[in-house]
Image (cartoon, rainbow over all chains, first blue to last red; front, side):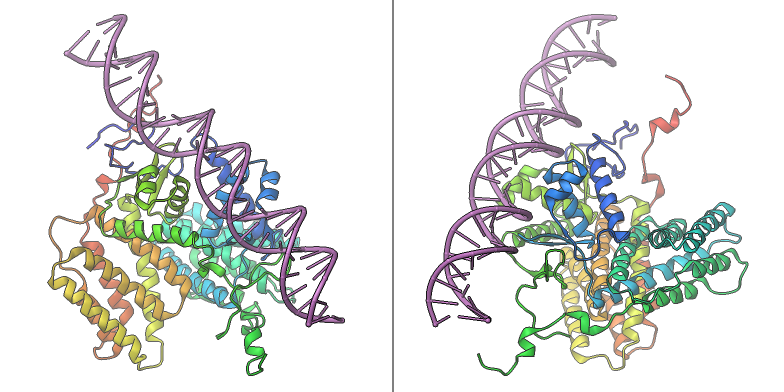
Length: 257
Length: 257
DNA sequence: GCCTCCGGAATTGTGCACAATGTGGCGACT
DNA sequence: AGTCGCCACATTGTGCACAATTCCGGAGGC
C-alpha cells in the first residue's frame, strides 16, 4: 500500500486508520497532562493516601492539578473504566472499594495470568538474559531496602512493579496491560481488607522467584508464583459477612409495618 | 449471597463510597443511553459493518444515534479504553486495526484465560448442573443453525457468546469481563487478518467442548480449548511484513539533514 | 422525641460557542 | 510539468454557563 510513512502515521484514505497505534504520541502536550493526572491519582490510591471510599470531587481535583473541571471529569472516566474509582451518577466519584467477592476474583485472575507469565518465562532458552536477571535483582535490592526501612508505601509500590516487570519480560504487552490493572485493583483490595497484624511482605518470596528463574534454585516458577499470590490473599480478612454490611429488609423480615 | 439489597446503596458518610458497585443502576435514564450506544457500536464492529480502520466522525455518530456530540465523545473514549477504537489526537476516532503482534498477543491472552476457565469448570463436582449443560447445548444448536444458513455474522456473534457463556458459568465475573474485551479484540483481529479461503468455523469444536464438559466424551477440556483457540488463530494470515509497511526515518537514520 | 417535609447550597451533568488543529485544493514559482 | 506554499474548510478540543440532581439543615407536625 503506502510505502512511505510520514512522521505522523496517516490514514491511507478517508475510511482507513493508521496501521500502528499512535497511542504513544504526546500530541499537543495536553493529553500528556491527562496521563500525568491519571498516574498521579493512581499512585496516590496505591499509596493509600487516598483510601478506598474516598470521595473525589471534581473541583478539588481540578484545583489540585491546576486544570479545568472537564479534564478531571475525563480522567475520572478513565479511572472508572479501570475500576480504580467508582462513578455514581449525580453523586460523583469515589475511590473504589472492592467487595470481598471482587477481591477474591482479582486475586484468582492474577494467579491465572501470572502463572502463565512464569510458564512463559521458564520456557525461554536458558540461561535467561543477564540484563533481565540483573534488573530483577536490582529491583529486589530496592525491595529489601524498603523492607528494612519499614517503608510500607514503598514496599507496596515496589511489589507491584516487580510483578509488572516479570510481565514485561514475558513479552506479551496485552497481558501485561491487563495485569497492570489487576495489580492496581489488588492494591485496593489489600487496602480495604488487610488485617491489623503487620504481615511480613513478599520481598523474600520475590527473591526466591528470581532464584528459580535464574536456575540457581530448584523449583517450578509457576507454582511458586501461585503460592506467592495465595499467601498475599491469605493475609486479607475476606470475611463474607462484610460482603454487604447490613440488609435492612432481611433483618426486619416478617415484621409488619 | 445477599438476597435483598437496598435500592440505592448509599455512602455511610462523606468520605465513604457505596460498598457495592452501583454500576447496574440505570440512573436518570441518560447513562443507559450511553451504554446502548456503546453496545450498538460494539456490535456493528463485531458484525463487520464497521471494518477495522473505519473513521468514526463524532458528528455522524451523533446524528445516527440522535444524541449530542459530547455524548458520542464520551462513548468513543470508553471504546478507546477497551481498545476497540483508536483515538488519534485532533484526527478523530477509528475502528481499531490490530497489528499482527497485537493479534497474536490477544489470542495468547485468550488461551491463558480460557484454559483457566475450563480448568475451573472441570473442577466442579460432577455432573455439572443440567441447566448449565442445557443452556450450552441450546446455544450450540443456534450455532449449528447459523452454520447451515452460512450466516457469517451470526456465527461470529454466537461464537463469542459461547465463550462468554462458559466464562459466566465459571463464576469469576472479573475474568469474564476481561475475556469479553479480548473476545471483541480477537473479532477485530479476525476481521483484519482472515484468509480469503472460507474456513469452517468452530461449531464442531464447541460441540466437542460441551461433550467433554458433560462427561459424555473423554478428554481434558482445558487442552481442547487451547487447541480450539490455536486453530482459530491458525486460520489468520499474520504475516509480520504487514506489521509496519516502511519507516522512512529508520531507513535514513544517521543521515544529517 | 422522632419522623417527615421542605428549601438552600453544593455538586454533577449537559449543551453551546469558540479556539486549535489537521486536510485538501488551488495557484504560483521554478 | 512538477513541487512547494498558502488559504479555506472540516473536524476535533476546550472552557464556560446553565440545568438537573442530590445533600444537609431546620422547622413543623404527629
